[in-house]
Image (cartoon, rainbow, N blue to C red):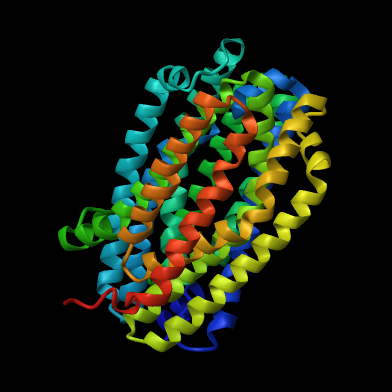
Length: 454
């Protein structure tokens, strides 16, 4: 009985109860977690921009999409483990849940080590590929090398979080992130503001705070009686489970990398307008991160809900819950988009008061923010597909539209009309095209039987 009580406290069974209440109770802590993460990422930029100036802010912003490209594949792969864990938890097969947990952690350890080595060694090469302004190259190299020095902690935290989220536990990641956010901001103020160590110390603060999150996760995972209890001797690659994780996670990893690749090319074109444009783009990206919060929180809830309920064979219940999640994500994203559209100049000036930076950042916000509903819809339906074991579908759509079409559009426009506003328009155009495709797939395909062997 004690074991059952402990398990109930650490997981959320989403196969019974009112779907919209379950999705909201899962999504709200995720939303708060993402809000905290975005706040301390934003605090990095605000502190760097205000204490160290435009050049330092441009150095931090110069290749933010490069970080996403390199880390997103490994973090996306953890989604595969989450789908497997959700499915077997919904089917009440706790032995396979345990195997999936330990295989996922083994994958996280291997991925983190590889990512650290690649990032630290090849940072200068990556930044040259990005056409980073020579004036900020030295600061950018130091920042990104220190950032990648903590890549193992970043991957492991996301690995542990994927396990907890797959089992319906979105509260503990919130608590751990709250602690690391406060620690990160305090260290930023100490390293950058008080000690004036330079832009690299902002990355050091992030590395330390991420490592603290991992330690908190380890304390929870070593507790006895939890469904995801960690045993060091069991951390290994279980063949059948690993193949399932790869089957569901590889498309998600590729999808994230595809988006990251497209954004890297966008960043490269932005950098061609020199450091003012780079600083403006980086400032707007931080603001857009807030708009993505409701999207991300509901997509994670949708994936877990769909995975658990399809694992339990609850098809109509799955449809009902997914509809609510999609609609809620779209409405919240659009409300935030309208707020950003109205307050764009004031928001950009938080990062850099340079009038040129504010003007360019506000221009991008007012082109893109009105269309956040399309971004939300695409991501929400993609989350349904992943939860249903159809991860190849969003990968294919985003590869075709968000990568190939977006890059082609930008390269053509920059060749004939070298104006930055045409880069900004690439986003709402591709969000709209993908939303049409996802609507047709969601409405007319048999996605609810994704786990059924034919």
